[in-house]
Image (cartoon, rainbow, N blue to C red; front, top):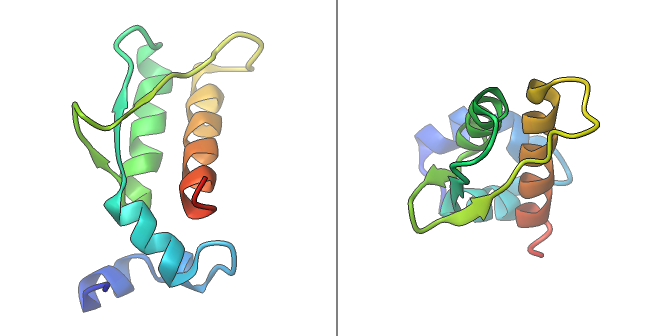
Length: 93
């Protein structure tokens, strides 16, 4: 169950039909760990997106790898990686 503070913080995500309360609770229960061999800029962008969505960083969390080949920039690669992870958690995959 979300606290009043969490409801306020994640209001936009709660109102989004593809996330909602159930999806946000899954995000808040998820953890991640970014692989050490990832481009630093891509890792920083990915980390900010995931933390902003409510995930927690943990050494035991799901390992995140970020493919930067073929991307316009490391920032885009990090954002795309975070988006894929968030979508998979919300859809409970």
